[in-house]
Amino acid sequence: MPVPLLDLKAQHATIRDEIVGAMLEVVDSQLFILGEPVEHLEREVANLSRAKHAIGCASGTDALLLAFRALDIGRGDEVVTTPFTFFATAATIHNVGAKPVFADIEPRTFNINPAGAKAVVTSRTKAIVPVDLFGQMAPIECIRELLPSLPIIEDAAQSIGAKRTIGGAERLAGEYATIGTFSFFPSKNLGAYGDGGMMVTQDDALATRLRRLRVHGGLKTYFHDEVGYNSRLDALQAAVLRAKLRHLEQWSEKRRVNARYYNDAFTDIPQIVTPFVDPRNISIFNQYTIRAERRDELQQYLAARKIGSAIYYPLPLHLQPCFAYLGYKEGAFPDSERAAKEVVSLPVFPELTRAQLDEVAAAVRSFYAT
Ligand SMILES: Cc1ncc(COP(=O)(O)O)c(C=O)c1O
Image (cartoon, rainbow, N blue to C red; front, side, top):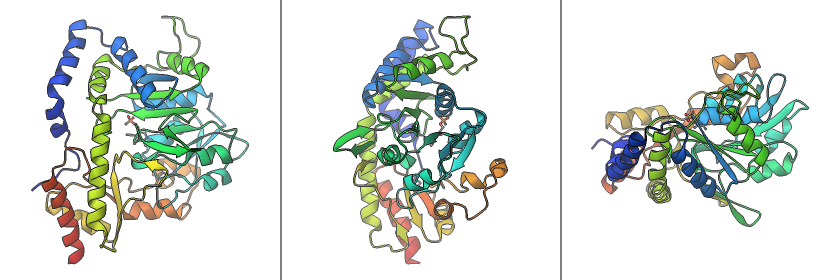
């Protein structure tokens, strides 16, 4: 039985009427850019991340870009982040003219190591970007404690709705950061039917700046206080996202159930390390990512049985050709480099059937039995 890594058609089938109804309302209104559906979604995402403000934009990539611009980060500045993340995290630092400076990950969670981040901070460092990888929040409070004066841009593209207990209270992804950024890329837990993104913040002045930057730097039409971007969320995407938001918590819970199923199925396979979730965290499992011996062979074995899997990410960012100018060499970040060689993500999407879960688990088990 084939098991795709992600089956968006299966999800769409469960909500088709809601989605089509919401999209038709927008089509009938003929109001496609920003507008009411976006404002409603912004309020809902602000509530979801307990943020004072939420500002929609065109993608998770743009959310990072606008966040850097709102903090006046540019030429001559440095921004610290992890090399074990999606390309956009560092690309946006580069694209505002600043220099990405990397710090290695904690091998168990794959998230940035706060002490390592502190060690690379200089007088030019203007911000730090922890990434909530695979749906698990980074240790954001440890970063704040070690680096209290640095703004934190939390790349929460993969972690909307994730939680972490901080100082005895449960905090949500995006809530604790200077600016939190979300992606609504279709494969995310809350995925649009196209591109979309959002920024959240507790800071009134930053929120106003972000709103201005997304509409060419001027809140009054045809008057521009600064040069910004065309980075608006469109109403059709907002309508889709609002309809899907009602299901998000239940979908993320189903991902956790699926993750537990695999964890149990793999406990007696010494060649596999199942995902470690910090006891302070509740992950949303955007990915279920294991470390596996003979990883590439395992992936081929699964592919031959029509079971989807993916490597997030095969080459850490400090070794990407486009970042050669930064001067990092192989061996600079051993935990990220090792992770890139060992990780593989398995299907964990909420609509997986018991038979599909069994199929994946049996295939992995039979690979290591050979
Ligand atoms: C960690 C991370 N950062 C940034 C992004 C960029 O988001 P988008 O694809 O919406 O531009 C993504 C997702 O693709 C991501 O996974």
